[in-house]
Length: 319
Ligand SMILES: [Zn+2]
Image 1 (tube, rainbow, N blue to C red):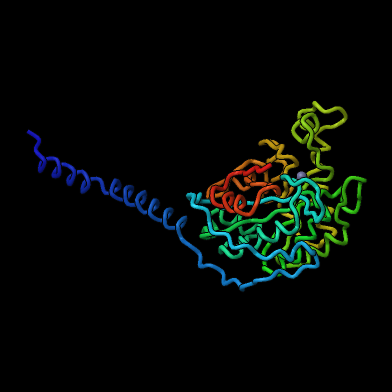
Image 2: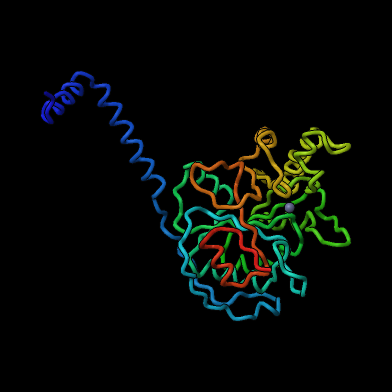
């Protein structure tokens, strides 16, 4: 009859007779403990300089900083990459393409006052690749499309010592269609000189339509567009940026979020270290740096709604 002591005795004999089993169990256990230590290590917060007033020539920036208490919602773990497009001082309707300069300044003050550390793309990807510990509170700030109005963000970002990346459509740099102005190559090069700012690629012509985007070009379903044009969008944008700013350009934003495994393979071949998408969510250690998730800030949201978005880390539409 097998009693409890008999069971232990059998187990003991098995372990003595098969030391490899013991070694195997120890290795697995050790690995699990190390991984959980690595992902939970908290980097000490950077000491941020207290800044009360943001210096800007913009009259609307004189709006006093509102004290916003964090909303009572549970915090989602992971690093949000928040995206902006145009900043305006006029009455253009606000949405995910348009934010007022004064609201932007309020949002940056909120992030600063609530202890968010801004990260560069390299820092984000190092965290995703387990090469750096996950900070307690961090955010990545993106400006897509290279509109010249994004330069209105610079005084606030500089005052608060925040990092940001600007994603340039190289075929539009210095070209201003009637409906919008884009940064000139000189402005792009100037931005890149600030160590807190980085310039990244957003292709050459930004194909974004349902029937004309990088996926349909690859598939050959868009007239007069094919694989060679896709290669040009991915590689020529990188090369002309690098030539103009004299620095490596390692990240690409997929126009309107159109990407697939084949496009990722081509981006890797072109030498990119990661690509950003319009997929919603946050980024964690172990996630794919070629499918970086982002949250686009809706300029029609008030500061409380922005604060809620930072807590829940889900896209918030307010109009
Ligand atoms: Zn875009």
